[in-house]
Length: 202
Length: 202
DNA sequence: GTCTATAACTCGATAGAC
DNA sequence: GTCTATCGAGTTATAGAC
Image 1 (cartoon, rainbow over the protein chains, first blue to last red):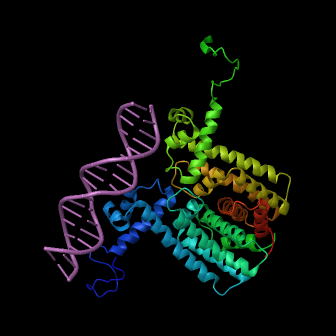
Image 2: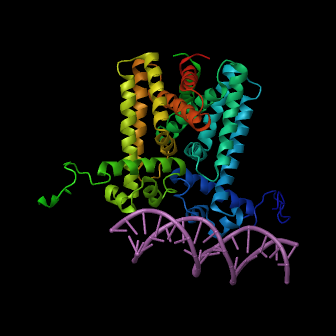
């Protein structure tokens, strides 16, 4: 478990070794995994497929992650950290409509930047019979929580968790509808559609 | 020909055999399939599991549906018909806020009545690499369309498809959050949370 | 019950860094 | 020489299909 341990070799601060460094291998595997699972689901994706797409041998997958399940948990955990960090940053120091606007904006940006993770998220959020249920529950809880906190402080008479779920769901589904089926439209149109649904009176 | 020799016992001219009729077998299999797939996903569910849970032999599954994939397509098609019929009925003859209120109400009722199908729906809607992509696309298109039509006629300046996606997503995610993690709360609280998010100004 | 394909996982071999 | 990351053919179980 060498953490940052940059090999003394080249002066470059990069982790690259002649061929590939361990970090690169891990990254390649993780990226291949999200991409494939977003498209076909966990069980329909074989470790062979993942290794192929990542350009590494199957043995490397097991050496680095131990098992297919553990690999998937890593994918979830990493994605979650990135997502909640981004959302928290967006809400930081804002309140009310402005905060909701910023959250929707940031969530759409994340969906656009990591569409595969977004797909995995929707696909797995409400499953209960899987081994990584705990990991997925964390993703959901923490993401919803950012919305819920905003609701709670700005509109105390609203139900925080259900309202948060509704807002999150509106943004996520509209965002994926956009990416998957109307990808040529500008983000702003999506943002406007979501915000007028969630913030403006009909 | 008369070989049809209906076991003297019962006179019934139906296709039913002693124990269960073909329709019952199909229903049992379909229900077992949605339940299992909602929980673990398509590939993680074996035909053996389905047959076990349905209380039939594996051969019956193949006799009635031909293949695991075809079985799943049937599940999707049947669920979709039920869902869109219900939604169309709810929107019928209504307009504006009243129509949206009725749609949200009905969609929540459907989620409550068929939670397993709802889970399968979220899990599969945005996947693109699967065989039954066409079937799932129909479910999505037709369900969204009901919302989109209401938006289009009542608020012509809004983007119909994205607004529909946002409304559908808000209701679906809030509904599943409710069923999966806060099942003891009354439907009305969920309905109110969604409607105030989607219909009322913040 | 049987046949066949496939997929998770294993493990000895390998090659570079010190 | 060791240590570490990698490779990939081989093993074994399971699941779809008939």
